[in-house]
Length: 446
Image 1 (cartoon, helix red, strand yellow):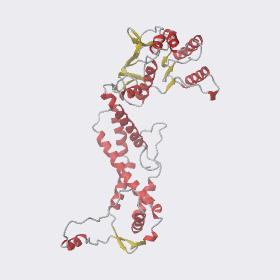
Image 2 (tube, rainbow, N blue to C red):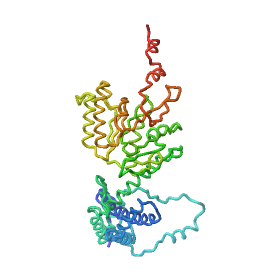
Image 3 (cartoon, one colour):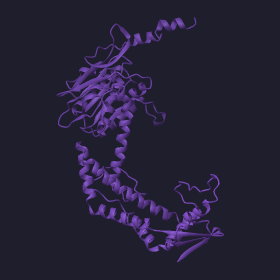
């Protein structure tokens, strides 16, 4: 039996037969998937990490399941059968005929030997080079159609295989993380947790690549411990990741800082000079907890963090006239939402709130907010210009920015655990940039 077609009839077959190519792609992908999962199980046998050993247990249970064994066996059997398919092409005039291979001999060596005696010198080769493009051209698609008709039963099994594994993906023993969405449309035979593991491994490997230059520059990264039964938190040599990345371009490194909470301490109140690194300190705390919660190594050493469920931040935001709310009203609305949704395991970060009202009003409102933080035992950091908050409650830890001794215009960017001194050094900073009253008078025309 043979199938033939003329070149004039070839048009339009690429799209019609693309499903055959997709089916073979899916079969090959299933083979790669089974081999990769099995290889990963073998490689994980040598690891000592507690997390990776747990992953090994999940994957081993999966690879020993009937679902995986059936997939692997069906994939191997079908690929072996397809790889054994042989066919011949008879090209005559404008017609191609596809036939089963009946064991016809290859006459190419005989032809070469016959004409070898006439060879005088090296000649230019006219061998045709097939492209590496994945998509079939019209001729290839029509030939594949002929092969599929010659081996109809085998290609029917291929279609049945693809239909069988087009249902919902198999699940492993461990439920997938809540909210995790994985697209299985292309390769639906991939188990949910395997796909999740693959994506998370990509993330963590990318993270290690990202921080490699920072480590090479001498900055410290470590895996944190987590406080579960208490609120004892601490870190040494911690730094802001965004700042470190920016400075790395010029060969600089950021100033690192340390912090700790112990016993009944819960809240950092950060005061001190303008431009001394207070906001960066609060941002650093958020980064540490976010990255630590993702399972990443974090910027710093000897790190112990809160395993928080959410991080709530209140940083400066432009006033939005579309809301028809004042800056103060917007601050209060955002704080209201924070206290509604925050739990005992949440981290709260405030940065210069209530700066749009008078000092007296800001002090009153801040004391009310602080009382609620204390009452609900939140772990928090509050950057503020109100020094009275630093001594408002025994659970509050006073942190303050510092200057270079003897030079109030220079900042050390160290946030130290000490009492608030009420000095912002704003005048010295204005003098550094010639923005004092007298300096402006000198520069303005009379």
